[in-house]
Amino acid sequence: MKHDIKSSHGLIPAIIQDSETKNVLMLGYMNEESLQKTIETQKVTFFSRSKQRLWTKGEESGNFLNLISIKNDCDGDTLLIQAKPVGPTCHTGADTCWQEENKENYGFISQLENTIKTRRENADSEKSYVASLFEKGINKIAQKVGEEAVEVVIEAKDDNDDLFLSESADLLFHYLILLQAKGFQLNDVVDVLKKRQK
Image (tube, rainbow, N blue to C red):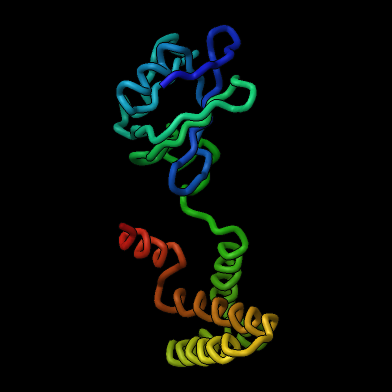
């Protein structure tokens, strides 16, 4: 695998991204030797500017970054390395060097899950529809999911796409509530689907 890279003082920045979650884990610097060692060992290896030597991430902690792929950017002066982390990436023990959790994020859906969680925790059933559902219990929440599923099926047979999408949104919303009522999140369902993939 040949990488034509342009380096400054023999070093090139390497952005490390989790191959599954797509979160940025850290930034390190590589020289030609560390890049070759990364390719040979399949463990991400940097040139440590402070130690002035090659440094394989995890060589002391065991929290290796197993290589998945390497890409050059359009100018050939930065690498994007996708890796599978074995444990936390940051020396502080955090998942990332930005002190963030390294979990899959589904954009707006993840925000909606957080809103549902907050509404449940605040438990103001007079002001919050979500809190009122949690107050009524799992049977009521499951019933709502069933009702919304039936409405999606009905709208799927008609020609009104707006109503179909609206009912689909209602179903997804109530399903996310049901997941949390059972102690789960969408990530847990995605994990099951990944295991089924052949």
